[in-house]
Length: 137
Image (cartoon, rainbow, N blue to C red; front, side):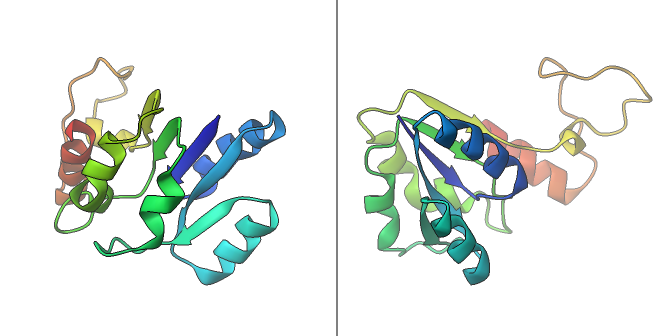
């Protein structure tokens, strides 16, 4: 089993640590060079990625992915991972699961009401609207 995480931040690292302890291969992206070194020390295959289209290391890093976690926020042009690598992701022959870490901000102010995945999104800013669009994509 191989998890590839677009954006190995705090939440993705928590999941990665649990899966790595069970023998999973972990790969993914990070922007910060210092973080890349820290993650590589854990045995993760890390690619520096800042949303660019022509990252030659990404297609080979995606190879063998069975589970993909997407946790980077969309940029001004939309979701960079899907914008530039949708076809590469769709072509993964062993991909069994895709997850997207969003934000509760996509639900807007619910006045204290309980919110779960069945609640309709009510974004109240350009940032949360971009997240809703990324979720849909």
